[in-house]
Length: 215
Image (cartoon, rainbow, N blue to C red; front, side, top):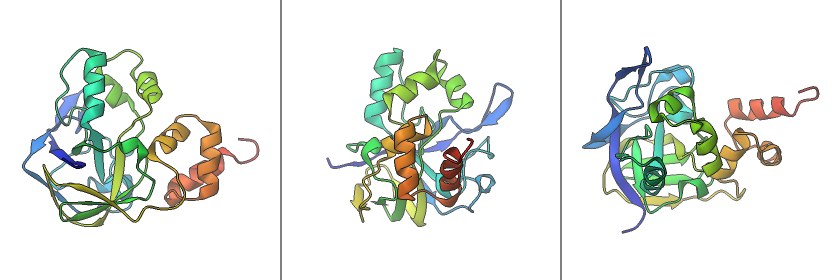
């Protein structure tokens, strides 16, 4: 089968280390997807989903999160435990597509939605606590595949089995894997991405500040 959605997942809210989190995603029949507002506090792009840390998650640039089943299988072997679809907090568990090779701002048709590859994930404390693996952030970063966040261009519905169609490939050649490496410390890649000026305004400003004199 071609690249497709294996599972659509929505958060089951839970208290985790004295805070609410939506990282525990469970399979659902479908996702109703729409564009949230521009800021982190504007919530998920998935109806009924829950975001605990709205200072760092949600909003237009992090509306929908995808992670590949192939990567879950890799970590399942490394960690020696079962990882179900949604285990890394993803709304979409995919199969047959290398999310690290998706181009930033690449458009993707899924079901009746049109999404656009947005920004990389930052492996945060909640994620590390949830996985419960010593040195998790370092290990996840070294692997180099953070999944992919999407912004919503056209709202609609996504179901398990929907094919993932890549359209309108941008010419810059910057992949999600490269953007993740840049975010996590690769200075040469960060400079290249800054010069390409392909990230959303807030993220571009952060890169510019990173290379400002005296920084």
